Image 1 (spheres, rainbow, N blue to C red):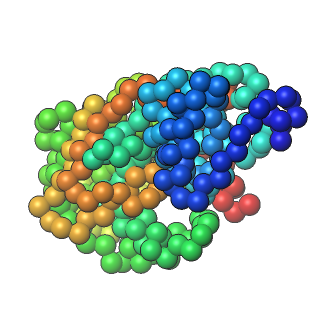
Image 2 (image 1 turned 90 degrees about the horizontal axis):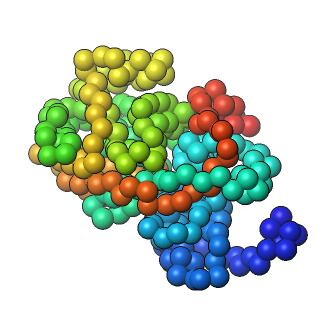
Length: 285
């Protein structure tokens, strides 16, 4: 309504599925009269729209409307619609890289192991929109039932880890609830960040969780942190779950490459990613 009130020609497309977001974005990318694409939704819808726009010149403006809104939070958006309006008016943009996992684009983080299993459980019980409380039972059940199976991780052709563990590969510094797992990540630097937690038991998991909350995890010898342009995650075991941007991901092995400067995104000038405290306050309303 803001755009229409200010004399802009607006065309609205309503998605009935994630695939619709990709299709609509591809159509917009091909239209000479389209100057800007605005996506309203959570990380899944944003991912599909970004995939449809990749390597086009059309700028993308995100209006966060999901549960976590990982990418929107990283770009500096908050819950205020005035921030979106200000971002549009200022017109400040930055390049966003995309990760490509087995041919599938993602904008934020791919997880292997524990969080992949949590996301899979949430997806199986999902009936429409979800909130943070929908994750409580899956997290609790996974904590007690998870089997710490071996992973193999290679970065730019060099194997850097083999053994029981959890792995995260991504493009943004903050994960769910603002945890700075990939704390050195920059979404436009042309690199993927990799964080591997050596983890073989619930005790290890609790220790890693506490250290991550304290932003000290990357200092310990049982955590491996690397950057690269191509990452491969595999396993001799079966049944390891994965996730990309909060949705169930592909089966192992997974090969991830970076697509640098894939999307031109509008961002609030001078904004910083939302931290843990801010996201908790949003979650509880």
